[in-house]
Image (cartoon, rainbow, N blue to C red; front, side):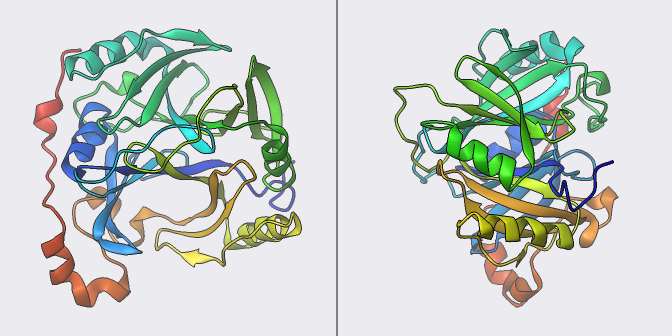
Length: 326
């Protein structure tokens, strides 16, 4: 039986990326992909910028894709070594043809499905060039978000995993195994796959790809800022923090992100890792039925609400524009 002390990491919590247009981001992730906007708040370090969270109905850990949309003037980044280069979502096996048609319907450039390891993969990019995949599988028992315009049997279930680009795998593997209790579960060519010890399910996978002749990445729109691992409690998080410190890595104090508590550290390959608690969750400041419907601010910014709202571009989601016969 797994215990919190032995296995304090349960998989992925969220992935946070940089974007350009807030409206374009909302249209793509809530509209084309059919994820739920579960929280509309601001970047705590730059409150003139939205922080948009997408996920399943409640924003469950392992389903949450988040963005800082800095505006259309922001520089586009470059995918490369030292980054979480590809974010993969999990979909049912029977849905691949549906998604291929849907992406083409909304003029999203998409590659032909291809086989990789034991899964069928569909690669495409969001409007800012962020690399995404849909991975078809029959392993995922999570329900998709019932948005009313994508059939429930085809809906995205949450993350499949992430793909880190590295110059080698040994040092990062040591951190995954020693500090995050991940284990090696398979490989294909220059790709090595890891999952929490004793478990290997959608929403947990971390792939390391150490292919040669890649440039280092550059941050900007269309790149991942950090990936977050899920831990069940503050106590479990502190255990992880102690292990990271023991490895000689610099790690932040615990930071209150309203909907979870966080610590951050950079792994040897250059990717920024976060460890985030499951509680308190996104119903912390609005009921589940109303998630994402209003701008939510942390208490220390409420006095500046009028100023912040004046700086943020208005955004609106029209689900009727995304109903599809695909």
